[in-house]
Image (tube, rainbow, N blue to C red; front, side, top):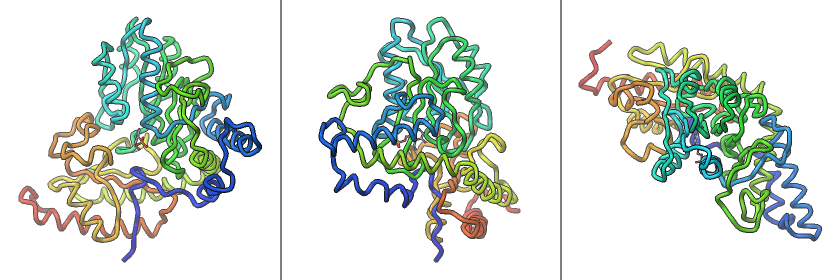
Length: 387
Ligand code: PMP
């Protein structure tokens, strides 16, 4: 049976070129970048080379603005708590959206418990936030705006540059969770007026266990991990050199291949969307135009996303119902609810996230299987009115 992996938004394979670049740093090239001997100095050179690659991918003027962390969740926590704690004497108001990932939602909830006020800006039916609404929510107490670049679940890409201009004009820090977007669409932190940008390694075919935070030169936030003062004192702890080397290589490849790979993914994505939408009672989730190249996500009336996933799994297809992080609960996705869907509508979701490993034959196979599965499940549904 054909095996098709279309859940790259939940976990991506490590690119073989990345793995090859990492391998020496588990063995012969062992060394702590803080050590003075030649092994230590080599590790330091590799650390700085990786930092430059990540900086270049996101248009950072100085590699000094990149801080390596352990994952996107840590970068989001560092950015939000670090900014809130640094500027708490200036104000206690934070603006965000209702479709952020839990690694933004939950630290903000925690900050609310310690006296911060958080405004959640709603999104429209496509999951898009309106920059004007953000502007109107700003008060003299606002110290931080946090908006994700793109939503990995529904694929919608936010008007980041517009929001960045508003934040910059108002002299308010702007954090962007770039996890689902960096390496997939062109991101330029400097031009888009981003002060803090979360970057994930695994979401661009790098290893897990490493991430980064861009901190614009001149922006000061409080560190949360204190210790030996690594990463300019912003994130102590001996650096994960194999992981960081891998993230550097992944960034280099992502930058070199961004445009051709993006175009290839868009062709496959659009074929999935155009054909799956030919089915009755089937809807696209997220924006049709402001959309990640790798995301094709849908909602099918009268059936449950979990049943679709399990039946597709039987046919060799790996897909998702939404955020891997919240699929453990039976709660519908907060993103779909924020987009105005009723609970029963939000339950029938299917998210296909394409990746480097997919080809047109995979798309053919998915287009053959999805209608069969949907028809089979609908035939069993008491709610289904028939064709
Ligand atoms: N932000 C977004 C937008 C995500 O989709 C995810 C999950 N991939 C995260 C943050 C958290 O990433 P991680 O679990 O790798 O820390």
